Amino acid sequence: MSLTDTAVKKAKPSDKPYKLSDEKGLYLLVNHVGKYWRMDYRFMGKRKTLALGVYSDVSLARARGKRDEARKI
Image 1 (cartoon, one colour):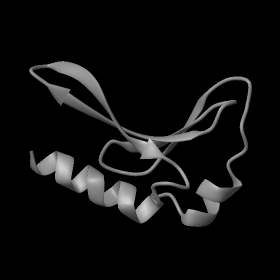
Image 2 (tube, helix red, strand yellow; image 1 turned 45 degrees about the vertical axis):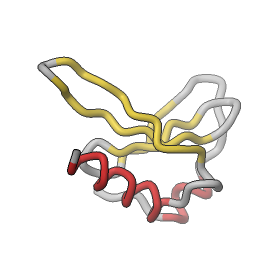
Image 3 (cartoon, one colour; image 1 turned 60 degrees about the vertical axis):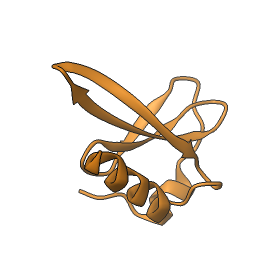
Image 4 (cartoon, one colour; image 1 turned 45 degrees about the horizontal axis):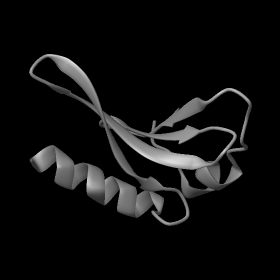
C-alpha cells in the first residue's frame, strides 16, 4: 500500500520514532523532531539506509523520484 500526501501531512510527532511505509524501500520516519525520508536497501548482503531529505523540503513525489534514481545506481 502506498502513502498519500494527506497521510504524510497528518502524521504527528511522537516520543517514539515510527515509520510510514511507501513502496520499494521508501518510508517516512516520524519522530519528536520532524519527518525524514529514508530508503532501505541491501548491498553485499547487508542492510543499508539512505537519507533522502526532510519532509516539507522534499515532497512525496520528489522522494519517490530520488528513490527511483538511487535504485538505478
